[in-house]
Image (cartoon, rainbow, N blue to C red):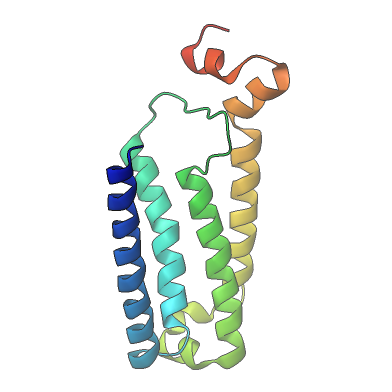
Length: 145
């Protein structure tokens, strides 16, 4: 990645973080405390799913180094949503403003769903199987091994 690309991406990330910070503050002030955190967790969860759907079932991308996949990001978003809902249950203001979030099983389902999702992604990965079988990830990606 060139220096110009790095600067452009850094500027976009900073602008996105600033906008997200403003939206979180606005939701917390006008809807209920905690609404911004729930919005952010839902955005991360749905964003990972949307990116994965946009990518389609293309070629495997087995990276030599660590790399976070979109569905892994969604699983972390589901866990964060469950934590936000547990926190909201302690205070009650958010659950009064949005009663559909008041289901007592919802936080546990979000957290458990995220953890199970991460486990499925880990055990179902071709890259993981290639690493344990000893073949190189580059050969696995090209389909020559």
